[in-house]
Amino acid sequence: MSNEEKLKILQSEVLSQNWGKLTKYTLNYRRRDGAWQQQTREVYDRGHGAVCLLHNPETECVLLTSQFRLPVWLVDGTESFIEAPAGLLEGAHPEERMRSELMEETGFEVSELEHLYDLQMSPGSVTEFLSFFRGHYLDGHKKGEGGGAEHEGEDIEVLHIPLTEALEMIGDGRIRDAKTVILLQDLALSKTLATSDTK
Image (cartoon, rainbow, N blue to C red; front, side, top):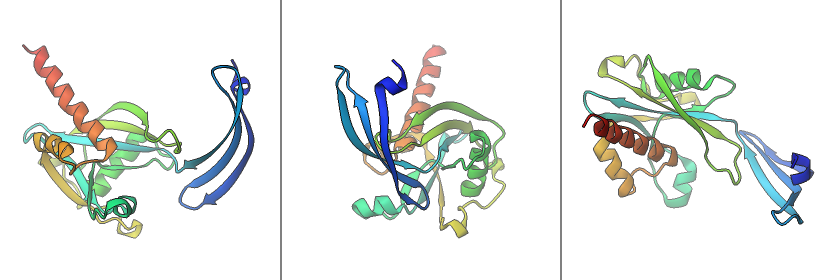
């Protein structure tokens, strides 16, 4: 079945175009039983992004950041939100962009990053996908101050947290950023599988 036989856009209206673009769509969607149904959806497009978890094999710590996030504060008053370094691509290649974000936010420069996967983060309303990366860091890799870009309103604290503690922080709610939870659990799983393979 072609796209036109499955979905027809009847109307689109840009509701807002500031930091991102919010568009209201009216469409006809063919349901699985063959019947057409008219639907209205709002879609937010702010571009795509990249996120990375760095792990120190010598200390077994992970490199995370903490910063103010207005949407989180509006929900429950949380003043500082813990997450893995991330940023919008803004036309750059994901790995290239991730390296610059790591330097800007944490001050760490790493030689190799492993691309894990690309995931849709909120498919019901946001077009964004994130490219997920993982890498290793050592104390000697610190080349800058980090802390984010002040002109962008960033005031970022850099955290070195033992992986075991970070996993506990997921359970007790101190870490609740979805992309960060995915990366932490992925790292823990990869370490468990590597240990099993050596037995």
